[in-house]
Length: 470
Image (tube, rainbow, N blue to C red; front, side, top):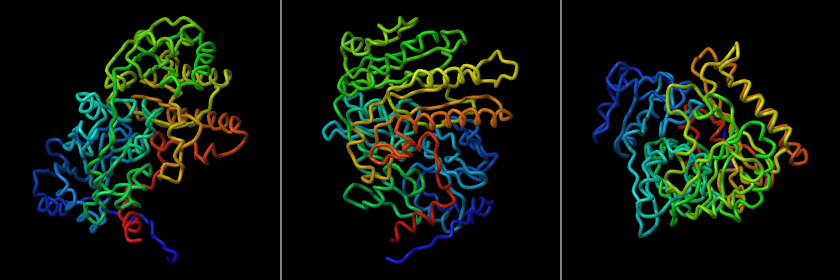
């Protein structure tokens, strides 16, 4: 094959009234197209992070794949700027468009579970709570998000870590097939044996390969679990770090996942606290508490909400506010054991930035958090980084720097605070891996679902068509 060149100049266009008229003629299956000012239009623009909202030129609300096919084919030919919205959880603005065509899958949120084949089928607009609910009826579960209102599409297409990653790998490691409307309008099924290049790309490379309208996942028998929050005061941070350093090497062996979180939970009346989110994959409360014993023996907690709960409740343990705030999710990485001085520095930075009493306070910053995710990566790292387009399989773990704020005037300072934390994490990570820029298995040590550096949607059509034709 000879070398190929693609012009990535943004030649896309905004939606005009003429486009709206033509698009409405194409819709035949009960879907709808909304123009600015029409009922439901503004509601369709709302995102989990208000900072990610943009004023689309039109909103397409499909109810079936055929209508999506017709609309995508037309929009591609007209070079319309296209954005696809699944769960509306993107903080980078990838699910929004300024003046272009927004394809919102919010009317396609059906999730079903087949207990005989132990599979789950989810439409492209589903949230993880709908997947969890459908599977739990049959005593099943799959690897899903750690927050119940995260969209299935975004998390899956970015790779996807979850509470069950320790034994089942990533979300994409449990993806059996996907139905995709590609830029030409063709409806394609991608599996490990059919349209394999496309399937490889979908498993971690993000949203730029078409509109994924359906996912089929492998499910597994799942009992109730033990989990909840264990809260310590800041003066106990060294002991809590000791506890997590003891837990990290044995998490898979003991069927555990969790996280060390800096936040200002409501019971603390605005004070910054050290939270441990704990998950033990067992319905035995005594066994769960024993497995997380270091969090009790190293320092006595001031609050303990742990109990035996249905698995579907686990994704509701750390759900942040769902609307009205602006938010950034900066993804960083770390290795265990954690160094005390480094963790203490991050806690001090969080406490200072989120302090509602400071003279130059950022309104709403007390709703943000910083989280070290102790999700054992060993199972995911058993696959080679070239096996899928997800290239972050290694011995490191992810951390989330998530500032939240109320006013657009604070966008710059809030995002800069997150960038500063990322610089700290990167420097610490490079030290921990001996100065190398890549981790075990040549992992990039960067989780794109948290801080996506993607090619924007205007390039969806030429890039995917290039891949499809070659």
